[in-house]
Length: 94
Image (tube, rainbow, N blue to C red; front, side, top):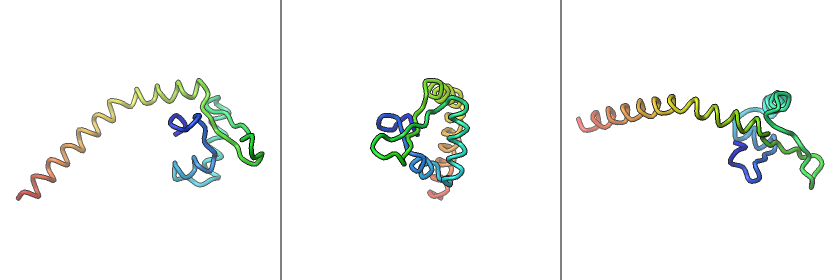
């Protein structure tokens, strides 16, 4: 989520909407990520009430490591979905 953001930052509210979580849950997750050194929380600069969340180098490294580790699972899931689509197509032809 943060990795595709302009300037790689998001507000907590935007993250909550993207993750489909409550603002309170998102705040708790951000607090934990800050404590773990995965993200930073800084002021917006234009509006003191707005906070911006950005990944740290450690957070970015962990993100890409997780993506790499999950790659085989994504391939397996895609294969299963392709099998289901082929089976559904055969049923439709009957």
